Image 1 (cartoon, helix red, strand yellow):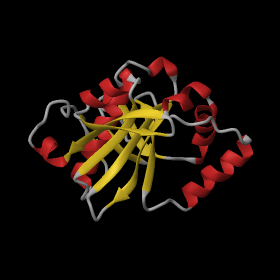
Image 2: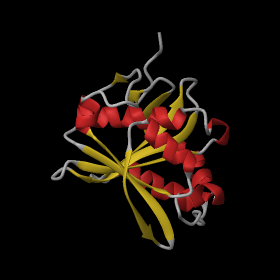
Image 3: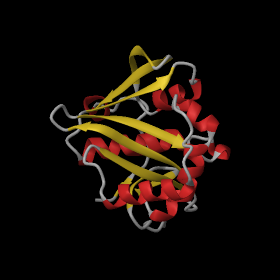
Image 4: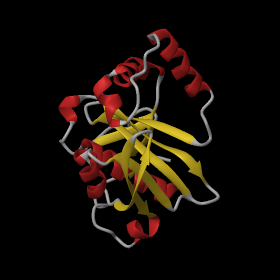
Length: 191
């Protein structure tokens, strides 16, 4: 039997998604400051000091945005390996955007990202009124695209922003309810 993790929101086959903690700041800072990881987000690495980052991190924990929620991704051995979020939450239209970072490279290509995305999407579609989750990924990031396709996302377009080309993908609640391929897997939801 697997024990419940403090702050656990949802559990996948390989990961636990949990509330963010102050102790996550060091890993989050390292990942946000990493040039290679920033490149996957078409962003610049975070360049301010750790103290500045920690202050922002603590502010977000103390005063969370109603249009954004970030969760830590842990493996079943309780190692913080990344983060997943939904943001641009629009309850009037029943949709939100998804983003994910697996910051620990040894977990890349091992199915942890797919499991985290599946778990979050199942949670959103069964515990909230959201009906659509969408995302954009750089068109050259094949690993991310495969991850999202395995989790049930389908391409619906492309866009160019900030000099980068993105593939647009979405997943709809009715696809999950119809048993669309890619959404299978175990889950233990925590309210």
